[in-house]
Image 1: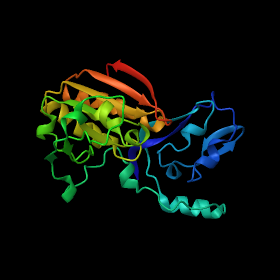
Image 2: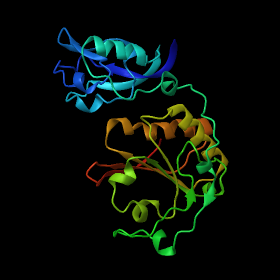
Image 3: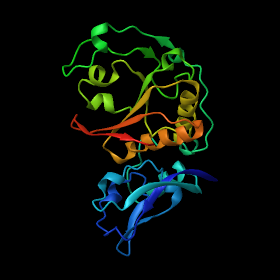
Image 4: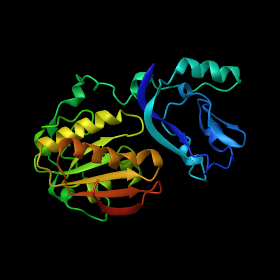
Length: 258
């Protein structure tokens, strides 16, 4: 079945055939042919980009186009025929499609609520604090109601899931005073994110948006998603982009027109 989804793209001019990308692809979708990395079959590639960081030449990128669905059963047969280990978990074809419908709700943990952190926690500080600066629930982008009261005239913090784990002082230095929406642009449906963000932007007079991404390639699409959401909403919001390193430091801050 054909669907619109993410898939690996190989720039043959940049590829020098070093082969470092091959073992990083657990599905066996890549191999070296005639001195260049090649995609064996589209159905073997899940498009999640585990191979991106292994290419020293930057020859691997992720693109979105209409291709055959990822096929976990075919991947299993392919790996077993080569005597390779089959991953314990593989995504379903449906979860990778860019045009998948939003997932239904119903989770008790998705009930919206506003929290009241202490005043001290809502003051930015260079020192870590034991006080939480979280002002509302839920926080996952897939779960937050677009018209929740905590988004009204708010400063929105759009953050990749890994950022709070990597960044010391996240609560006091970045979360304090902001409404937050978290997500993973690598594993979740990006078009679902675009639609949800467009609804939030349309329904609320946001003061600003701060988008925080990890330095890893699979995380950089969060600001792209935000840009598409603004286009869909027909509104522009003042935006700052912050890149966080895996060593827990802020690598870059920039005002952007997404």
